[in-house]
Length: 299
Ligand SMILES: Cc1cc2nc3c(=O)[nH]c(=O)nc-3n(C[C@H](O)[C@H](O)[C@H](O)COP(=O)(O)OP(=O)(O)OC[C@H]3O[C@@H](n4cnc5c(N)ncnc54)[C@H](O)[C@@H]3O)c2cc1C
Image 1 (cartoon, rainbow, N blue to C red):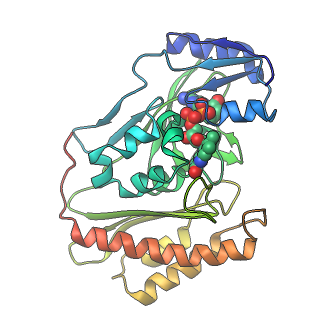
Image 2: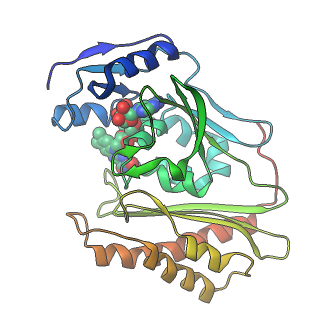
């Protein structure tokens, strides 16, 4: 382990000022399950680690009156995974978090840390992108909102500017009276303690006549950043789902992925799995959408 200084500021302004002053030599820390491993393996050598845990107000998990879900930067994966509202209304996110690492890891790991690490295979990203999530950032120039799908610029790289900190993730509600179904499937070589070889998530909403009124499909681990399968989404929009249509969506998603060969799988295998998983994830979301009467999630 290399030596580094440690700061645990009590306010956001202090944390942001420290980050700005130390530039690339400082790293923020939430749960530390990515950062400390990277430091130990000497993949990162910060001179200063800025721990966010003493800053008040970052640990909120809330459902707003309009049905939006808000997750503060210090909310752990385990807290979200065990929340009954998340389990009932955001099953894609729930599924992703219940398969992230181990229970011990999930007790420390935050969803915002998972996002800011910007790994293409990070489990929380596909379901949150499929749900249309946005991030609230705080920095020296003020606050701003960024759509999660626009946050990533490459593996480990994001649009965060100097001194900027992610404060929370907001998952918007779907407009009523749509019936929504959400799902995430992680594919790996093992059942547990495994990073995704491919991860596919969707959020799909049906109109009263059974046609697809809204759909987002997000693919993980098959491109330098998580990506939307937009051609597949376009094929589904306005249509009544059938087996043939879901198979076509799977084919289109395969063509939109840009996987690489690595130790976990070949690019060809990953592409093939995108087709299979897209079809399956859409089937799961459809079953959920058809079985869920439209309702606002109560706070
Ligand atoms: C044994 C093990 C198994 C794992 N399994 C999985 C898995 O199956 N799936 C998976 O996706 N991940 C997995 N991970 C990775 C890790 O646990 C997650 O990415 C976790 O969610 C990171 O959250 P954290 O709070 O620990 O982040 P930290 O390590 O504290 O931070 C991660 C990165 O985000 C930055 N950061 C943190 N908070 C903020 C903020 N508020 N604003 C700006 N930047 C910030 C940090 O500077 C750092 O670069 C595993 C890790 C371990 C050690």
